[in-house]
Structure formats: structure tokens, C-alpha cells
Length: 449
Image 1 (cartoon, one colour):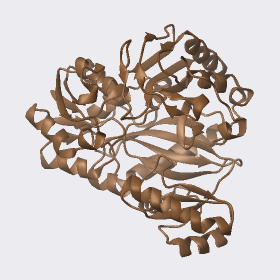
Image 2 (image 1 turned 30 degrees about the horizontal axis):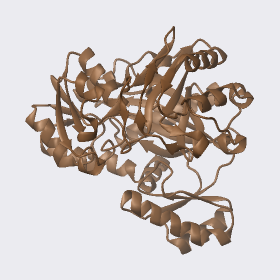
Image 3 (image 1 turned 90 degrees about the horizontal axis):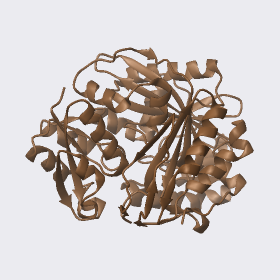
């Protein structure tokens, strides 16, 4: 096992990884920008290295600075968390070139799976169901493909995700302008304007499978997560298991994932994302070659510490078990963002004036905030993740609602009240929602003052 690891991230995920390192007796080295001086992750770490000004491009995304921090502090490995450099194959190569173990898949697999067109090609060859669509196409090719597949269709950036470079096209008249906008947005976000086209599956549910893979080909699937509560393709609430899957579909999906992992030579933790159609058919959409924000729901239903397993695998150890991990109960995660739902989800940086986390059985809070914490305007708006577990889905919903009602978070608007409104809705309680839930309900809530 490693003796010292650099955590190449900030916020709640940096805190989460540092705690896992300390539980394994490993020294943790944090990095921080000047905007994060004194942040919780810098105080929990054994050492902290300033790597630049507030701008992420000059600090957390600056590969030479992050690698230098690891080298100068004598680290053996780097954990990237999620976001920032976590899916950047150039960063993986830089780690390898400097004899640092990257805690994740290798650069080649990451690059191939980061190209959504290539990922679909390889997984299609492995027998995983795919949404009807194309490889990268120009506007004319997109028009021909749409006519053949049938509208509505979805234009998507080949080099990225998170809703950037994505457009729904309902008719031939919309295709040209939508293609131009999607390509320009993809170029600005990812440096690559390549676009591919897919048939729009609607109404659809977004279901993903968590996986762990070791160097000897061992694969362990940790079940699925339901991620259909989204705003502009950004997840707000996740749960496991999904109310939409029967056991036969669940086993089939996990079997496809395990086969795909072996086919592409995947290593460490990853998440396969699928669209689930109303008839129960499912289609692969992308592989996230990293830890996911919503990994705690899988941890609570399986009892497996995914970050700890990432560290073990990266250190050359094998999985304790392979196949399908046993699981029990139901878990729900609510993302609490520093955003104001009553004003179109505008980001709401500021100072946390009051912070009292919920307690009680089956409640977990992953966060980096305390009273007095300054939420800067430079980074992701996530301030906390509330995760609740109980024996059944109805009980888990009630436990989550109880925890939200006890959670005091004042000083900035947040999405807390919106989350409670969603959880209390008849659609969520019945488990019949889709990815268009928020648009259809037009829910809005005033965040905590």
C-alpha cells in the first residue's frame, strides 16, 4: 500500500478522499488555490501545497503544478477525485512519466472511453446495446442520418459531457442551426467541436452501473443508480436501486457491463451510463472513467468503500470478490448546491452563516463546509451531499425528508427546499418519473435564506 498520496482536487471530494487515506494509515497531501486558503481539505491533510490563483485553469487544472506538488512532497500516487483532471489522459500520462501512480484507469483506456464515438464503437463490439445513431458527422451527414433514423434526434459533443454541446432536434428545419450551436459550444467547452447524432429516447430514465475492476481481470458490479432527476442534464437526486428495473433487466445490464470491462481492459472504478426506455430496453450512452459524485448510494447499499477499493486496486491488490456484489436496502442522495432555484438556479456564492448537519440512524453527509466557510464563485456549486439509507424505498424517502428538515444551512440560497419538494411529490414516491420530471412539473422552491 502507498505511504503518501496527493489529492488533486478540492471541496467535498477532497475531504472524502483524505478521510479514506487516513483510515488506511496513508499520509494525505492536499493542493489548493488562493481562494481555498484555509479550506477544510487543506486542514485535514497532513500537508497542503498552494498551486495557483483562484482560476481553475491556473490552479486545479494546471498539470505541471499538480505534478510538481506531488513530486516535491514525495507522494507515490495521485487521486484525482472527480471533475478537474480526473478524466484527462494527458494528466494520467504526466503522472506515469514522473513515476506517480494514477488512481484510476490507464491513459489509453481513458482516452478511448473519453471519446464517446469510440466508446460506443468498442462497447457495441462487446455486445452492449447502443442507441441508434452515428459516429462524428458534419451537418450534412447529421441531416441524412436524422432522416433515416427519424425525428426527434439528439446532437451530442463527441469529446465531453455534462450537457455541453447537446441539442434536441425535433424537425429538419431545426437541425442546421442546432448543429452550429452544439458544435460551437462543444468547441468552447472541450476544444473539439465534433458532433454525433443519436435517436432521442423519450421518455427515458437515466440508469448507471457502478463497477470495480482489478489488474487480473476481476470485475465486481455494485448494482445500479437511478439518476433521472436532472436539470439541464445535471443530476440533482440519485438512488439505488432503481424502481424501474426488474431483476432480469438488472442482471442483464450488469452482465453487459462486466463483459465490456474485460473487452476494453478497464481498471479501477468506473460507471457505465444507460438510457432506459419505457419498454424496458436499455442503451449505453457513456462510460465515466472516474469516481462519481453519487458513489455514496452504492456504498450504502453494498457496504463497500469505493474510494478504499480504488486505493487497493491502484496499489496492485485484487478485489476480495468478483461478480455481483450483495446489496440490501435503499439509499438516496440529494445534491445540495449553492444555487437559487427561484431565480433560475443562478449560482449563489457567499458565506455560510449557520451550519447544523442532520444526525440520526442511516444518515450520512459528505461536505467541506462549516460555519464561516466562504463559497467562492470560481468552482462547482456543490456544497454538500446528503445520503440516507433504510430498509425499503418508502422508508428511505421519509428518512431523507426528515434529514433535510433538520438540516440548517443559512447564509446563501440552496437547492435544499427544491429537493424536499421533489422527494414529496407523488411521481417520485411512485417511482414513475423520467429525465423530464423537472420540466414537466416546473418545480421551483426558494432556497434557504
